[in-house]
Image (tube, rainbow, N blue to C red):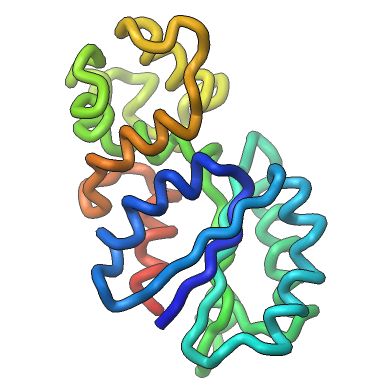
Length: 202
């Protein structure tokens, strides 16, 4: 089995390079294609999926991942599903009600990829020991998908308060550093668990 990931930013690739092998082991190969942001990915998705439809081998699956970014999650997901349907590629969401094989997994990180890092505070503290291990028990961070004011901004505040990246956090470096220590089975982010469990269906 081979997975092609379509991603909106390089930090997602940096994280998934660590996470996908831990979720799926050695049973799959993977490639990661990064677009110039969410708009670029969604605008080009219909044509890209139609291109895949013409040649994609039967043992390939596509995984499309974007951030919610405080937009309407259902609207984003509907747009992604519509692009796959238009291309003639059945999705995991559609196939849950119909017997058959899916070719596309569409997933939305709520509200941003950084929520997944808050979902594994142990990994966050291992990567950045100055962050207090009690962080996950604090009210603002108990539900990683509901962190107020943007999860990227919240992560920046947490790291800067702990003495890191006073000039602003480098997203790709931070994603790589935290994901290197993440355990997919202990993550408390609901959107991460939905993503993880979908991958395990390939």
